[in-house]
Image (cartoon, rainbow, N blue to C red):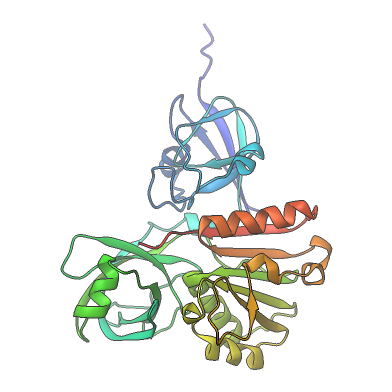
Length: 345
């Protein structure tokens, strides 16, 4: 008697053009099936919240266990958006991920010990945490735009922050951190941090990074979402090959004192051909001389090359969704959108 297999075949398509085929058992979650086949998809929470494992189902039937609205919007879901940690396929499927297949070949994040070298208070609302991880043998490799889990010294609490630097052989790391009135990490940085404090990291995490540049780049940062772009711009500034496309950074904050690293952005304007940045404040004070409003108020259609752009968004969920709506309303369907949503904690 012929035995009919109930296993489904799934094609995993990646942005570098590679495709991996895996078999998935009935009821099995996609990310677990991929791991059985030696593919470690980027993942963080495994609870349908962080969107590190987001992709798009191009064909086939599937179900999603749970998806937080900040991970995928209704529009994302209508377009076939999925989270690999929540997807259970019901037929043969094809799923596309907007990241390189090389992210899936490592063993995942590692624990790294680092020492505090400096806490740089940039304003009442922002600090840069400088860390020395030179005790690690070899360079900590991450892609600018990725992030780390950081254990708050003296506590069991962990927080996630994007690297605000590029990888370097000395493993000198920077994290841009929003200071909250009573946040666990915020209180540590303001009141307790000392040079030499030991900090544990888990890194690298996330699938937000600069892909191959072939079209004009749009970067949209909300608050400390700027950190991811600082790493990317570091890479552009020091990289052996220059980017021959215009790069426009739109940077929105709540209050003028939330703006940070402007001198660094000025330096990039001198060092990176075609780079420009534009800032805006939602709640200005009497001394503010710049633009007032939300970040989409900075947009002009000539920045977007008739939709032929690659747009990178990093900031709070409402900002990310507002930018996506702005593009949709102007029928810029040819724009490629890469995003990282976060909430300060």
